[in-house]
Length: 84
Image (tube, rainbow, N blue to C red; front, side):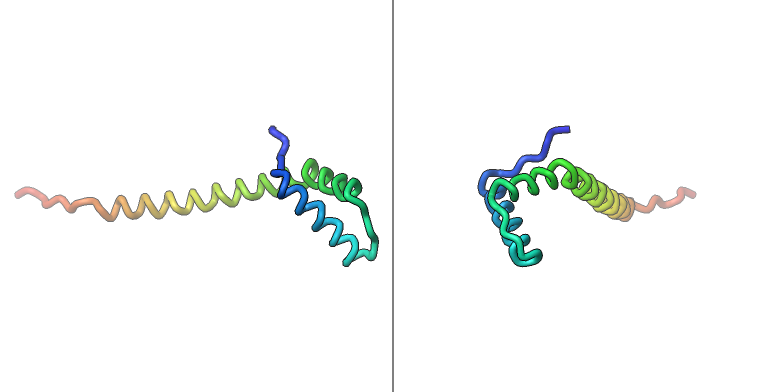
């Protein structure tokens, strides 16, 4: 599987958010390099689980929509009169 990548702007924002989390929640100041390491950990170890769950959720939604679409198609069927 391809490794997940973030755009530079997204990566920079995530690093900043990690630094803010450590500061506000743990009272620890961590540098950019440490925050980058935390981000890499989550991107390699946790993100695939989140990604797979998102795909599972997507499959469920598509399945429900297909059932609904199938019902709509059946509703379009014409009634056939029996011949005498």
